[in-house]
Image (cartoon, rainbow, N blue to C red; front, side):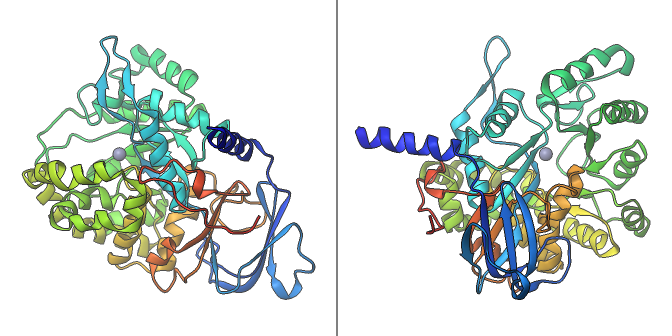
Length: 452
Ligand SMILES: [Zn+2]
């Protein structure tokens, strides 16, 4: 009892303590996230929440603060997933219409991200009682979590894609008050709109937001300083969304192969898009290879009961769904669409459309399978996430002045992308994460960093 109270007090203190003055990581190979070549034998100094210096160790001079030996290790920026829907709301609502949310489920999912080296997540559509509640806790430093950026509710046309988590807008002038309320009450970091009439694969046609309305809403949010991301799935609607002013796209084209002109347009415009390969692939993966749930990162991220349910009830349900097999067929086409746009100079940012650290690592594997190099994929998973958010001046790379969100690896991620799982320590905001204090669904883990 006393021990529990002491531990709880120690955990509170650890969360409340000011950032350590300084860390110096010496003799480390830096992969800075911008696409620049890896630099060996570097010294990285972190002061407070930011990276103060990145210099060759030969000229670094005496270290400041606590020294971390980076010999044989690799330093990358904290990774980012720019398309998540945080777990914790399963679609249930009370009689009064308020959603039933489980904060413990949400916080376990957030823990899985930071445990896996993801220091930023972007929730692009959720109940505010879930995503915005956790964003508030994260910003008040009350939970150990990645940085959370969130849209709150998404916005759609009545009856269109994503209706269940949406504010429904049918007319700009008539419904403007709803937009004002969304901005004032939810303070979205980015707005999510959906622009998709479906009618492909196993999905029937639904209504589509008129393009002029899409344009009006995007402009209105931009005038409030808010960037936008638009859910699209076809090439045609992607182009229309871009010319309606979309700042980013929430998916690659997944309905069919892209045209050469679309590839050129994406390279010319440099509109960031979230990669979201794993959402389509995860259904057939579970049916055909459920053993992936027994790998260490899934065992850490999910409870034994959840993994058992996935292997039995969920697997049977997904096996019977046409959508599973449609998406298995379309995944190679979608991979090729992503590869073509990236190789042409377009801006992909890692997104999963899911809610766990292991899913984000799966996304990196799929991007390499698509034909991208690990160097390209690391850029997609770090710097480009910051570009997607419009925050590349502040975060997403190992450069002087940037926020100290960092992952130290024990093996070379350029040799094998799975080495982004070989984590020696995760740092967010200049603080080393204590894994033993993370509320992982798979149970407590040992602290990785053995220094003070
Ligand atoms: Zn989504």
